[in-house]
Length: 138
Length: 159
Image (cartoon, rainbow over all chains, first blue to last red; front, side, top):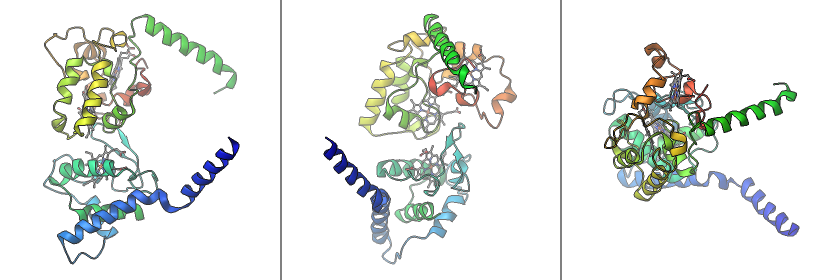
């Protein structure tokens, strides 16, 4: 029993000390990069600066009361945001909320909903990668 | 808080709890206990207690999540089925009946309201809240229960 515990502990410690925790985020970025390269062969990598613009820019194609990502998430992703109905949203920057973007299905679900809400269309793989890069580097 | 008061306060809240339950549950609405429902129905607003609407309302709402009060709240069909099962089983006229109290009073049996905040009983409970209070920047609307009922996520609305 105790030996088993020590072993398990060792494995857990190993998992925690290696960058495995960021695995799903890296996998998502790799996936978006591959798709971006297919769409634009000249694609040369994501840009946190473009991600920042995407986050704070006002778009005209979506809903009038949510013209920007910042409408709900706030312009500073290191601070908490708020939904239309008033519920607090935890900060989007990974430095502020380390548990962000670890479930690819959740990330994709919200990109689908929120890009449609703000831009009135789906975000491209490059836009998703830029935005995610901004959030992980901030 | 002074530590020595704690057991006393705990005793009082246990008493208040059982009193509410005995009185027909006017003050306690069992909060959502299913983690998937909490996640999918609790991200844009608090996860509303299933005992606040009848089963037919939840069915109607789950039938059109893509156009949910102007928002896209859609989920995959498997998740939707699980959420609907939970809401329907714990609704105001099914498993959640003991909590619902008189909340459905005045709602016709063929009416499937989508808003708790339009139930006649809810409106009566809130008739003294002024228009200005509803628009307060910390409130933002009737659907933000937590702004006024700080214990709403735990099922209590009597503060």
